View 1 (cartoon, protein in one colour):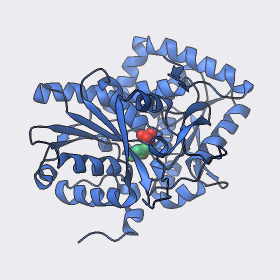
View 2 (cartoon, helix red, strand yellow; view 1 turned 45 degrees about the vertical axis):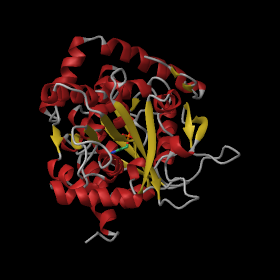
View 3 (tube, helix red, strand yellow; view 1 turned 180 degrees about the horizontal axis):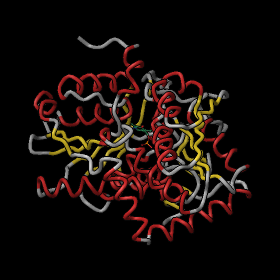
View 4 (cartoon, helix red, strand yellow; view 1 turned 90 degrees about the horizontal axis):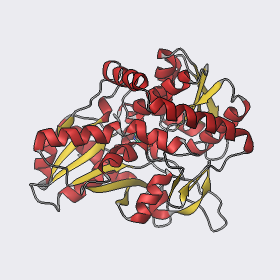
Length: 389
Ligand SMILES: *Cc1c(COP(=O)(O)O)cnc(C)c1O
């Protein structure tokens, strides 16, 4: 369980949080060795969550693009509609193990808030979710879902009113209520040990891809693509594949694509600094002030990224690129019309880049795209943009 990924990661937190993070680390150390904990996680993931998810051949899309075969890892079919479930369930069980009575979480697209609210209901833990006011407006169905699941949604009304501010509020809450409260962080970010805990729970995605590829093709995928916000679906996809020859590609959000726009592309447009407990790539100005980010996909709208991705970028094991709002929307419509699947706008970024590369690759090559969530939450945003044709 590394605290550092090369020069990235670490534990940059106020003194008051150090004991809580140590308590979490030791609970996690014992839980991951405990067969009963693993069995309970696997049972609930299977029976309540719908795992394993299919590795699906997008045959019509592949034919239309006319290059490499495109496969989708269907995390959109997980209970709640996104990969966030995997991590929320795992950490919810950790909270129980620690004897906590209250869950707090931050959420951007609302998917992590929904997953945490589901887990809070199931495990009988009082749940409060911090969410930027801008995100509450653009992801209304998820606000309603959280409330129906019994969670309290706390609007965050300062700064950019998106994910970064919501995380700050959750840390503030945790510092004050550390005895009773478990902070269920939603991505592979923050201080140690959160990035490695989240990576482990999400690695079910990459492990299933490996097994499914071996049994279906007796071969590895040539290229594996995932979108990168904080980086949890991507690290969970990539981690089990790091030691294989498969080419790995992370896709960030470039936002509007205007020349001066940084979007939310921390790895492709940022530089190293410290934010929210970790040293990683950040979107910042010359003085180190964090920049306002911008993306059509609320779940990607974040100025930082998980520290392991920063490391994998520097070592060159994973390639990182970005896709614009427009490219993501095109991919969204294309998948809807060829395959009858409405993807979330976040993985539509990964799909856009996968489609672009597929066209340049031979027909025998296989690409796997992690479809991290379904698009129901995005219908209002998509409706505000002209659909092609
Ligand atoms: C939250 C979310 C993301 C981005 O978060 P990561 O931690 O980068 O995975 C991507 N896709 C969906 C569907 C999401 O809900």
